[in-house]
Amino acid sequence: MRTTTIPSLNWLRVFEAAARNLSFARAGKELNMSAAAVSQQVLALETHLGRPLFERTANRITLTVEGSDFLPTVQVSLGAIESKAEALFARQRIERITLLASQLMAMSWLPRVLAAFEAANPTIRIDLLMEGTQRKADPDLTIRFGEEPHLVRHPTWLMGMSHVVMCREEDVARIASLDDLLSFRLYDVASHAIGWTALLNHNFGHQPGRQLKIETVDTTPLSLMMVSQGLGLAIGHLPVCGPIAASLGLAICPFVPKTPGPGNYYIEQSRDRLQRASIGRLAQALQEAAHSSIRTI
Image (tube, rainbow, N blue to C red):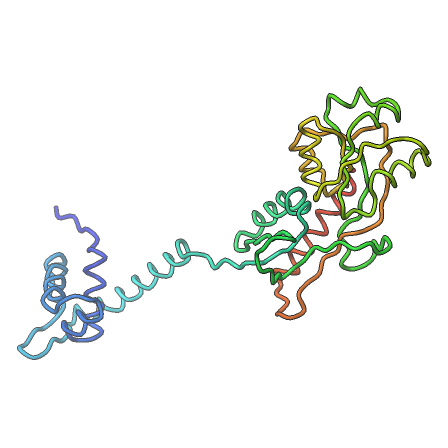
């Protein structure tokens, strides 16, 4: 009993090209093969099927009745295979969005939020840029900081801030009084509107005659690194600094209450380019994540 096997896919491709062109030479040019190689592949298919597909003369080829009947089936089958392969294996088009943010945002709050967004939107990738770097920035979206009043209902509002004192876990029990607190070196960030003097005056009143061991650094991430190494205390801003503080093993000092501070983060879209739907989707995801973060602090 003879078993019929499926013809080679390559034989079918060669047959389809030869039948469509009615020329082994033209089919060979299309397939980057010689005319002799095309003829050999067609002959192999004919031998496999046990039927001639072409009538051959010295100057031309024509389809046999069997070949004419077979051609539409081959063309439909090859088209279905190619369509399915493209659907399954074609490389997805990746859309890129450039987002500019402050160093603290970029190093702390944003990474996990952006990772979740990309996981939910596999055809979108976020290129995150930090303010103050030397890279030329022309972002699609910017998270900016401003000291305007607390405009929660502003359409581009992202989040406000609560100021807290960050310390190591092992230092929490050591800070039970203002004297305990002031025995530490205190790290200030030069650009912040609320530093140690303003924070202490707000919570404990003016303390004339007290000597504060304040040192100024450039950024909040740097001040938190100093704290993690046991060199002093720093002011943290929730919720934005929460993830980096947690990664450094830092704790909030309960002796100093959370203090709402001036300034808010806002989202700005570039007005000089097309406002793609994906950019609006990212802006909405950022605001939803920010609201979730605020509810947990």
